[in-house]
Image 1 (cartoon, rainbow, N blue to C red):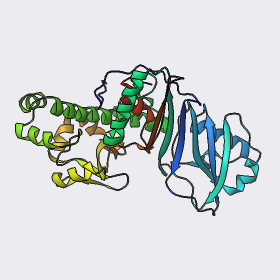
Image 2 (cartoon, rainbow, N blue to C red):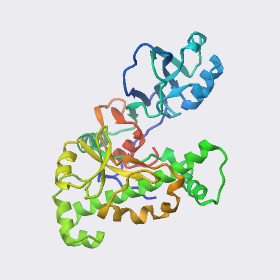
Image 3 (cartoon, rainbow, N blue to C red):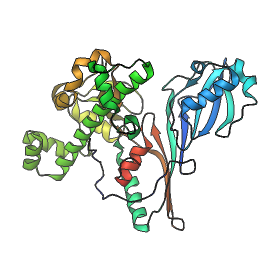
Length: 362
């Protein structure tokens, strides 16, 4: 699919490599550890390994089964990442002598509960871009200031779709019965890729609406989008680039439950204050759907998935997110542009890079 960007600048040619020096991810836990309980909490740093590969090594060393380990999220294989994993404290003594060139246990704690998937606030990222000229450093600075102020589209990253970018087609084949997948994890992964693909298509459509409303006059925008002129006028009156509609599914930000937008004026004010955000649909059963005109906008995108809703677990995903605790510096002598920022769970740092540089598949 052709991805749209929020920012309008030309592509910036820089060098980015996902290695342990230039790409670092640090998990931010959802809550503080109690300091007591039957679960051992390990703060682990790894490099050039997936989370599963790391857990496999810990499992082989201490004797705990891989399913006995708890983790909040899967981290990139490439680069340096730190995260928390839990295991029963019965294995603590065996892990005392654990040693691996790509894994280091930084510290330990205790908690009453096993860490569950999703039990994280977000992640903090460090990224170093190389071969950055003075002019491009100025462009990057301007772009990251805009993203910090305005937020950014929360696309699924290219990692979701496989090396060839076609994992979603396998997911559709599984749903339609054209393909069998006996491995349950891979079965769910491919279907998730299909849901992610539809979400990205929908989000690109919402960006297209924002660009056409901002860039065209009322008459031309109405023709291009097939909207009533009065609707275009109302959309132009909205301050934010991302336009909201009555019937959209919104969500309190950064935590809370989804709800239907039935008072657009009030919700626009809260959106401006970053108190709420728009969500998109990962199609499936028992998940909230938009209504009215907002739902009409989605019909063509999600029509293909409607016969298979009972075979998928649906959810809502933030469509627009905000960078927090942003820091950046240009090191002219090295031609490096370095940045730190926090993202909520499930958001991709590579999508930030794509938005900054307008280069896909960094």
